[in-house]
Image 1 (tube, rainbow, N blue to C red):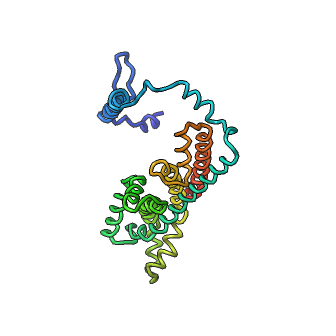
Image 2 (cartoon, one colour):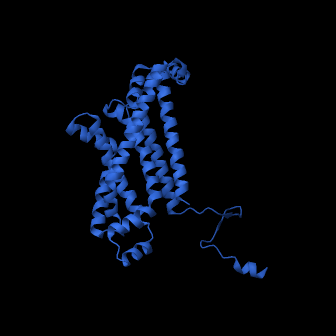
Image 3 (tube, rainbow, N blue to C red):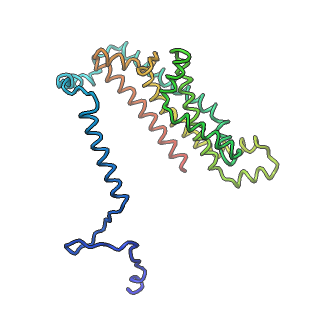
Length: 284
């Protein structure tokens, strides 16, 4: 018993007692009060924004329209079979758009990711590439798409270029971090045997980071699919499921809107399942 009592360490901060004589386990410090102050500030800001600052027309809310949306949203039987096939075809186009931009961004970002890794490049070059990629990532993908469209017109090519540009910055960061996690002993062992930089990269760096790279590609494919869905109604790019969602919402076709969103949900769920499986394999 004495040994057990000697192993019990006193708390770093002495416990305070309440008026009833009980110990107060949760101690309020500066960080706790700061978190509470930030939460209260956000709450009052949200109430002020919704109630006074923003021009929301709450008086125009119609319960009848809400009931119509709720009753017709899952009435997929009201959609003609030809329209369902058209929606599925647009969904496939959207998936292909997200996949193409992901592959192009992954291929273009590979050499820059190698130069961004500190264990493979000079420090000044690594910092320069990482800073440039951070700037590109800080701007949302839609903004880059709008920038390219304003300069070269509204085409599918400019939309792809804008999405690839942001994907490139994403892969520069993910590649650089993956390559920096490679065992430095393996790299030094190959260099000591006289291997060239290309042989070190092809024989040790890329094979060691291959699983993580595949996980990053799957994650970016999911992100680009979401961007490809939004890009239709946002910038007017035709041929994606986002454009038909925008059209159904304008005419009040809630059955078609529900079917389109349900297809988007199932596709995103498949991406999530694939990404989870790849993460589990990379963690082994």
